[in-house]
Amino acid sequence: MKFCKLKNGSTVPQPVVITSMISLKSLANSKDFNDILALYELGKKAQDPKHEIFSSKQAKVLKDLALMQHDDSLHDVVKDIAQSAISFEGEIPVLGNPVTEIF
Image: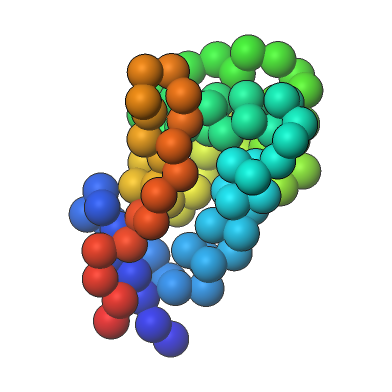
């Protein structure tokens, strides 16, 4: 199995990065405002575990995509991928490549 070194320095199995990025890209490319807001909330939650999700709609979106756990926490791997993939231009979430190296 291959692994990915992420921008935040963590190492994650490549299949986990691929599947997580599929979900993140679906949010980033959505026309639904709740999906875009869910991406924003995920990025903020990854930066600060104490961040409260704005609405139950965004929490449901993230839970349905298995990006957030039922207790509203993030699994460490999802947190690492989100920290590495989601940046902000002001308050606008921008999705990028989280990987710096594959080995």
